[in-house]
Image: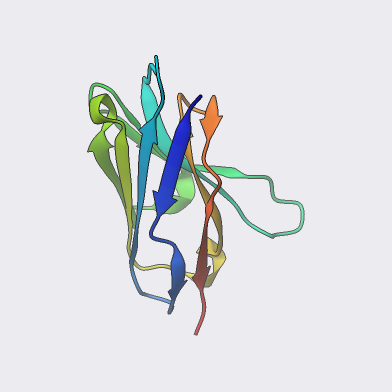
Length: 115
């Protein structure tokens, strides 16, 4: 059984910053990637990949990130972080920690950007 613990969400003003954290555990767990996926309450919008980090350290980001977010962590140690800067109201949503692209999901942490 895989267990993901996420933390770091909350309420922040536009232009502010938040850091999300995720730690994974589980017997026999084999992880190639860790990352973040978000779900926004926007009509007609599906969920979005925010960022992934691979075991070899490579990273990729959703197009909307535009240099504002940075993913770090150590896949071998089952930990990942997402530093989010210059947050905008449209970044509001539930952010999920994901393993191996979308094989395992955390319960999600709410991020709200509002003045």
